[in-house]
Every structure is written in structure tokens, then in C-alpha cells.
Length: 78
Image (tube, helix red, strand yellow):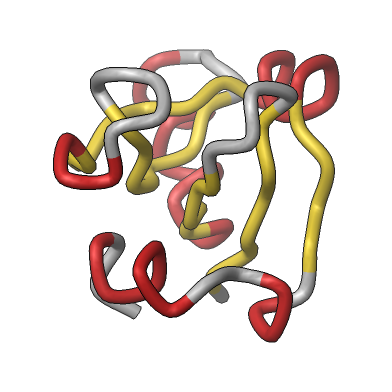
């Protein structure tokens, strides 16, 4: 399942929640695979990356897909 988040700086992330099990079993980490900006605020810098559960809990807020602007949805490929 894809979950959408908004960082404190206003950037949006798309997180694949199904990947957490893989990260836990193989690396012992509470991480997810997702899409986020490499450069804060630059939509064109979106890349695939590992995102920690701690980061999501501490610096992001979950949002509905309908709240993610179209420009961001296109950039994160959803």
C-alpha cells in the first residue's frame, strides 16, 4: 500500500508500506522504500530512497492522496 506524507518543510513523500517487513527481516531496521526529494523544495529532484519510521513519525504528517498536489503526484509517479 502506498501512504502519502507531508514533511515539515512542505515536501511530499510516497511510502510503500509493504517494504517495511523486508527492511526489518534483512537489515533489522524500521525503514520503508519510498519517493522523496533529494533537494528540499525541488519537485524535480524526487528519487527512490529508504525512509526511516522515526523520520516519518517525527518530521512528517500522513495525508490523503487527494491532498497531494498534482505536480507532486506526477513527480513521485503515482
